[in-house]
Image 1 (cartoon, rainbow, N blue to C red):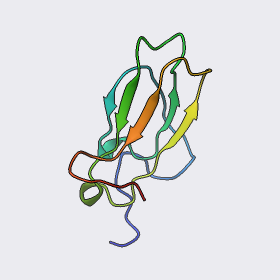
Image 2: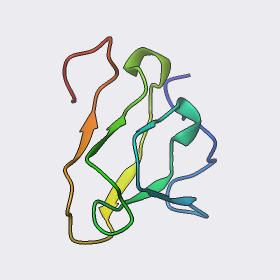
Image 3: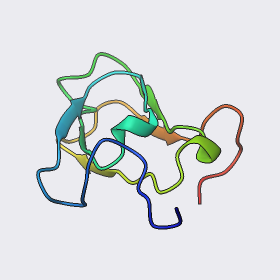
Image 4: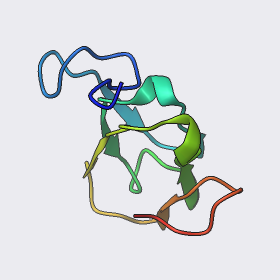
Length: 87
C-alpha cells in the first residue's frame, strides 16, 4: 500500500475542494487533497491555529495553504499535539 493516498480525493489537483479558514481548525486525514485559503484579515476575529492530523494516522496527507488576504492576525499551522515537528 505504499502508493495509497489517505483522504477523500482520488487524485491531486483534479477537482480539489477549496475551503476558507477564518478560525481555529483541526484537520483530519479526510482533509487530504484540499486547498485551504487562510484569512487572517477582515474575515478573522483573532489569531488562530490550524492543527495538522497526526502523521501516523495520515500517511500521504497533502494540503495546500494559500493566504487569501493581508494578515491582521497571526495564523499558525502546527503539528498534532502528540508531535513536535513538521517535516
